Length: 114
Length: 111
Image (spheres, rainbow over the protein chains, first blue to last red):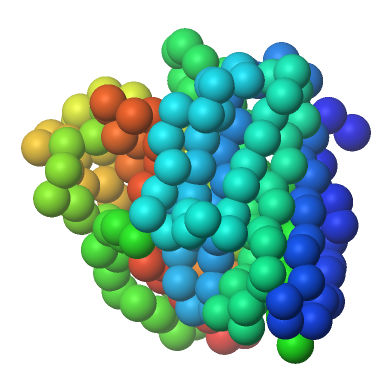
């Protein structure tokens, strides 16, 4: 399977704990995006990488959130000291810079903070 | 976060009917994408549009990139039960390359 892969699919955590999600993009794609989606809403942009450089961060990404893409391949999104309001679907997408640049999404990680 | 205006918010239609939905923005985009999302899954890309005025089809789906570059339309012809889901538009910011999504159109098809 050469699509975008996210791990885990589901995560339940207690408030105050740290969580980390992983995203493996389509292999030749150099752009990687993280989005958050809550029930009944469209995906909201969190951050974006071009190769290993993090080029933009949304104001939604508080100091408790950090994302990395160390070698321009897979990416991790960490949430520290989780709050109930962090409960959402976290989506990762990748695209190839240039003609087209269509973004393809993974299946998402569903986070529930209890 | 910023979201595009998408309408209608939801639709209940009979199998076999045609469906139209649209997406509007206050900003100009260079690329429009249309996605379908089913419960618990990530959005699946349906159609991509790259030029103002462009009309593109994918099976029973047809999408258009508005002339003003601030809107896009999606039509589904002869709907079938498996068309059920939430349809999202997304416009690509020409400066930052991030995609901004619409609020979604929830489609239900009655057999």
